Amino acid sequence: MIKVAIVEDNTALRLSLEQLFNRTEDMQCVASLSNLLNVISEFQRSAPHIVLMDIGLPSISGIEGVRTVKSNFENIQVLMFTVFEDDEKIFDAIRAGASGYLLKKTPPEEILQAVKELVEGGAPMSPSIARKVIQAFQSQPSSVMTDYQLTGREKEILYSLVDGLSYKKIAEKYFVSISTIRTHISNIYQKLHVNSKSQAVAKVLQNKSV
Image (tube, rainbow, N blue to C red; front, side, top):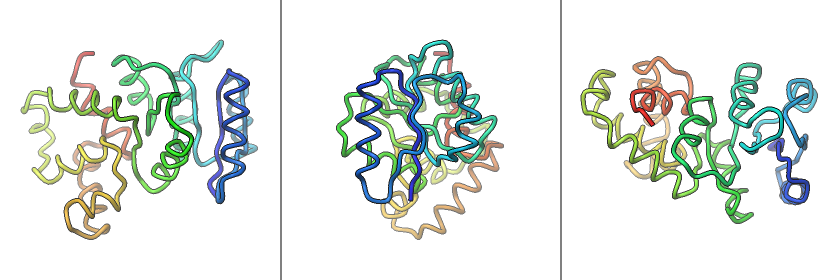
C-alpha cells in the first residue's frame, strides 16, 4: 500500500485528490493538510511514503516545506504539485529535495502514474518541466561534468533520471539489467557525494545560475 499525503490549500482540489488516491487500488491518502504548520507531527503520526505538495501555500511556502520534510523524514519522497513553471521555482524545489515536479493541469491518471514511478525509483516531471531541467544540464560547461569524473554512460543515466525514467525503464533503454543500472547510479551518487536522485540533480544545478 502506497501511503500518500497531500499539502494543498485549495479545499476542492485537496478533496478531489483524496478521493483519487482512496479509490485507487494499493494507494491510500493518510494525511490531508491545507498548510505546513503541523507537518512534522502529522507525518510522524501518518508516516506517508509520498507527499504531494503545493508551492504557493499560506504562511510557509512549499519549497520551505520540502526542506522541512526532508530534514526530518529522509525516506519521504516529495512530489511538487503546482501551477508554477518558471525556472527559479523548479530549481529551488529540486535543490530543496523534491523528487518530482508536476503541474496542476496534469490529468488524474498521470498523477497516479507519477506516484507509482516515484516509488519505483523514478523522478517524474511534467514534460515541460523535464525539458527545462534537461536544458539546464545541457547548458552546463563540459568542465563541470568532467570535474565529477562521470563516464559517458553515467551521464546518460543521470540525464535519464532527470527525464523521469524509473530504474526499470532505464535498464530497458540501455538493454542492461536493473542491477547494472543500480550499480551505475551508486557510482554516480558516490562521485557526486549525494544520496538521492534529487540531490544528484541539485548538485549539478548548483553550478548553473538561474
